[in-house]
Length: 166
Image (cartoon, rainbow, N blue to C red; front, side, top):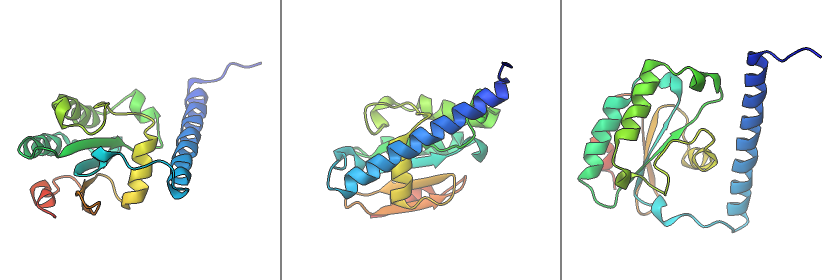
């Protein structure tokens, strides 16, 4: 029996991880559709960042958002990494590393939920991206208390304008 190459092992791992994400996300959607699984109370007044490793350096945007969030009590932040290529995480670009570094440098009190870190397999984030209609990356989504979502896409998005939405 021939030994598997590192590339084929990474590909198999990627396919397995994507399958797990799809199954878990599907289960979450099915549970909500069946009336189970209530929305978490911290889902209101949250700014989501949906991004991928290929989106370049978002560190300035993340830092600017951190400053805006610090001035608005009760407003929380949630970053969601969306990627289908897990190999990009093994050797991250300097731009992607800068973005992750900026996210990790934000005070933990600004984060929504219990875990301020990024998740490689983020089933909750994947369900939220679909529910909120995210179609482009990077996307900043501000969910207000009523549940209405406001979206700004791209680097250099007008975050101050986004947070002024009601």
